[in-house]
Length: 182
Length: 182
DNA sequence: CTCTCATGTCATCATTCGAAGACATCATGT
DNA sequence: ACATGATGTCTTCGAATGATGACATGAGAG
Image (cartoon, rainbow over all chains, first blue to last red):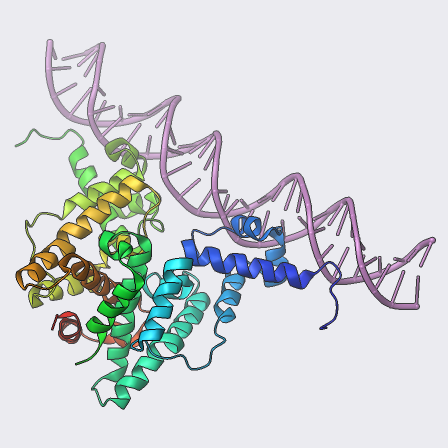
């Protein structure tokens, strides 16, 4: 009951946001066009400009979309690793992981993506490493996150055959074995 | 004395190839334009079509360029890891690593990049793992290579601050510690 | 009912890109 | 010296893309 919408602009916004999230995850920002987004959403692409301001701001909106959960668990928690890898396998790696290896041209966009990356992957790891008394926890956290991003993206890209074909559980086990500090 | 060049088409080809290698390494294939390549090479971009057939074939030519060394050492050899990370830090990660996480649209181009990736990173690792008697050597090799690619690309991208600022030696040590099987 | 504005549709613009071709220029063989 | 083909320069084309604004339409206010 947040007030009934006339011709449902809220719904159009939502549809665009969802379609954009999917497409950005599948093909990345650059290779997604506002026409494709509009087509998938069943909404005229011109409304992207009206409701978000432009493609870049739509991207920013998708970034803020799923930061719902507060402090996420770190990568070395099996459930967290599984969730991330599974999500990437089914819906694409997501725009945030992509931003780690291929920065955006727009500095503002890149900064936003980098912050999401830090909050959702690096910081939890850094906390864990600090807790465990490792030296250089920040650097170790970034390194571990980068390695995980590489695995996740590579698996989705299909470039590595065995990696693409292996089941999620298998990957989770090997990744955790690989990344766990010793 | 391989026959003197009239107006030195061989030199033009070479200049284009060099400039293309640099630009592809710095910005990746998609974000590099043939006009930029021509400008950097000091050669008219139209000659790319003449000498290589087009942008995609120029890219393929750069891939075949530096596969001089025969069987390269595997990633877990410190010198090899250092060489790769150092090269990436100074001249960009190179088109091959990029292909691991962001496939090209042209299937032929992607296949060529994937093969280079396999020959130069995965196969040596697979041999090592087989030698060491690990199970699933192929999968482990691809996983390790993917993690390394993630670290290398992330470091070059500047998205992770500590990772970008850390010295090569430091990274090499941590990467080897991370990726070495146990 | 009618006015008004939010909402949606459509056409078009400016830019960028790879590609192709017309034309000019120079070197070499005869 | 001239003809021929290789080499280089320049313009232009067609497609794709993000953005913009004019116009149409429908719902709610008075």
